Length: 302
Ligand code: GUN
Figure: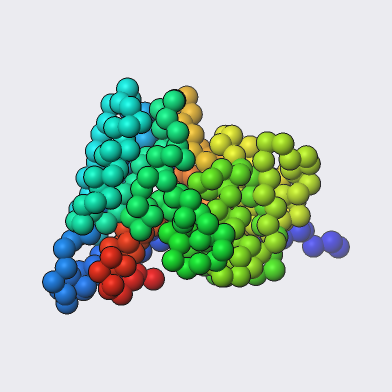
């Protein structure tokens, strides 16, 4: 008689618990250094332009996370109608302020503002989002002085924590944004960042997306399309990372992945909420601590 096929057990990659663990480590790291040395407290300034509800929530989450660790965090809220010149002048002031160690401009910017010009105004040493062209260049070159964008860094940290092998593996990333997909493709493929994967960077013009993802050991959904990725996109045993976040009509949240369809097929997936989101925030905190430590030539976190 044939044995019934055993279903794979699918685990959830708990970003919330991992971020809480990292937050504890970050808090310890900072209190230890502040006790041992006469140093000013780290400070992050977040620039928020306009009133996008999601951006307002994100910047408040980052502020609270910083404060829990002992970092001072200030939100500079500019009107949506402010000029690009005002934003640039604000950044230039923050660049000069020796007691501001991290600067972050929440994206997206209002229409009419040039994102690259604004991001490149930030002092690259204070650029905790890693989006200044110098940090982007260093990331590509494998220069460890790069500030690494927080969501890709959080994804890599999550894979490492769960001991998910990336060396020699095929990683398919859906979405080529400058903030997630593209930097992640570099981290995952580079030897310097210990990714060592073969990466397919898929996007809206890619042909046969499903054929590509079906061959991948790790699939990262960062397309901004709700529940786009389902079991027909993945091979049995694959790991699926969900970067999307969408609010449904009933008020609940979902990601770019239809996670229910992966049960028994995927080896693991990151849930929404509680997966990549908290990891991104933990990496913002880590990057502020890194910028602060480098400023005072102190020991860096991680
Ligand atoms: N908007 C959405 N995600 C991010 C992020 O990681 N950093 C910034 N600055 N803006 C965002």
